[in-house]
Image (cartoon, rainbow, N blue to C red; front, side):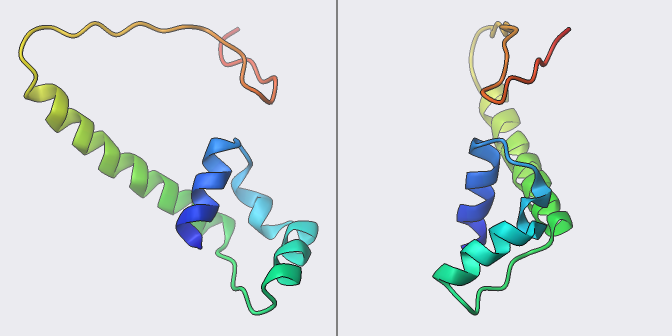
Length: 86
């Protein structure tokens, strides 16, 4: 459940603190009354741990590729209409 919750938070760009919002907790308890939700700090720490693990995987993959790699960026606005670059 925790892994799916984290995936949902990241993909939909929800704040970590959503797990501490009363209406969210009430909703989850209506589905599964004995659910134990992690804290926002726990969610943040898990996301950072997943990031670090994936970063190491990507470094390994990229290090072993022959040839050159080109990275580009595309400035965009998130689905929540938050500009990433000004």
